[in-house]
Length: 343
Ligand SMILES: Nc1nc2c(ncn2[C@@H]2O[C@H](COP(=O)(O)OP(=O)(O)OP(=O)(O)O)[C@@H](O)[C@H]2O)c(=O)[nH]1
Image (cartoon, rainbow, N blue to C red; front, side):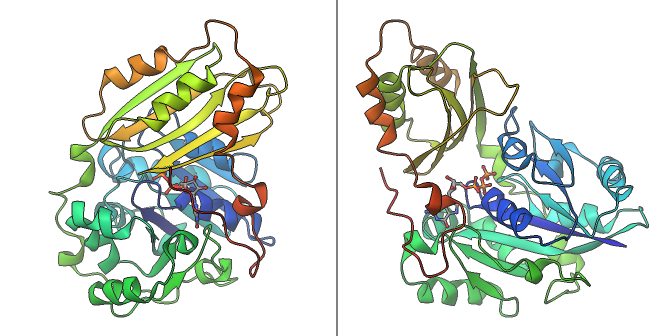
């Protein structure tokens, strides 16, 4: 039976980064993924495409709400037919892990079995998000592996680990940066998470305080290029409730023909530059997730389109937020950590 590992974590905690790390370091393990994004555009699926053996993607809602057990069985069935060693489900950042686990345990597909829950925590945002969303402790309680990510932005982890331990006294806690967990912790040749725990009905009950009830999502797309200064003005003054924004920006300036991936989490802002995938038409595609984020945010973005002449120097406003490629893609274990990312 193919183990199905569920990867959860609040918005922007680093699930896709971890998944990409696993895919890059799989060393022959054949991995299938189900990627669920809350917004209309599945940015996460685009981020892992090309690296994965088999993928099913679902956007515009949380798997835990929009899919029932038979839908999940159908998705798993598509992957179970392929020769895979493990299936990883990346839940959306607002998914309710209890509901997801319950639906996976209810699967009737005899080719797959539940392989455990990995919860990714953003060490830099942990205190803030857990104060705002006390219900997130449920994901700590039932996790089989807790990945305390973004240690490079948080400094000492001892206090955080002590706090996490008060909610889960048994599962391993791995402090890491850029999702660099040892793949063998998740799927060995005989895949099994280190602590395969029995979950009680109480552990899995209660979907009442699911975080996404209070979050809105807005999508913005544009075939016309964006003006770097106007877009940076939006990003520097983004709506207070906008917790997460991600996607791709088309600037279309001479000398800057690359795709700019943008990521915000709280007050963190980063761009990552890469070539547009072969055969794709450059266009801007953004997903915004937050509280009270409404159409006015999209209207503001509409006004950031490039209408007049743009100076190449205007790109300096953007490039100061460019990540170093090494910082995002597999920095050496003892190498310099990514710089502080606060805006
Ligand atoms: N400094 C730093 N940045 C990180 C680390 N891990 C991830 N990031 C960045 O954090 C941002 C969000 O990471 P993702 O992997 O997209 O987070 P996610 O949990 O998949 O996000 P959602 O699916 O939207 O919930 C990206 O810009 C990542 O490059 C880390 O350890 N340190």
